[in-house]
Length: 112
Image (cartoon, rainbow, N blue to C red; front, top):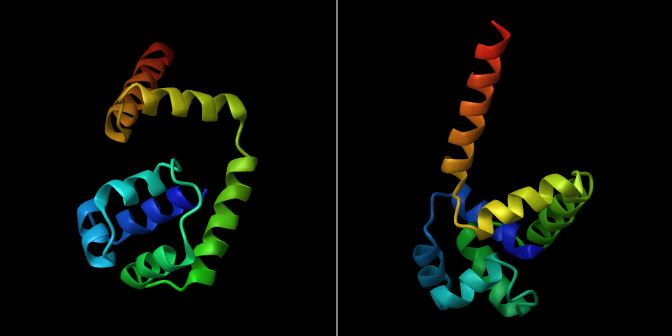
């Protein structure tokens, strides 16, 4: 699950996929496949390039991966499946958030 950690760090640093790939000297498609865990076993050399651009050490990246896996293990599997289905159907985070906010609004309206 190193991919989602890289993606989170990239987004925290306001880097696009293209920017990180270019600065790390790897292809955008390869980086995308790493972030989506399609390429689940990138080489140490590739990870070091990515770490250098993100400003983290390799041990920090691996530690973040371990922490993320622990957090994911504590989540309800049904919720994870719902999120996965939403992602696979093309729903982005903002659309999901809007839907959630609408449901909260609707529920509050029904309580009044």
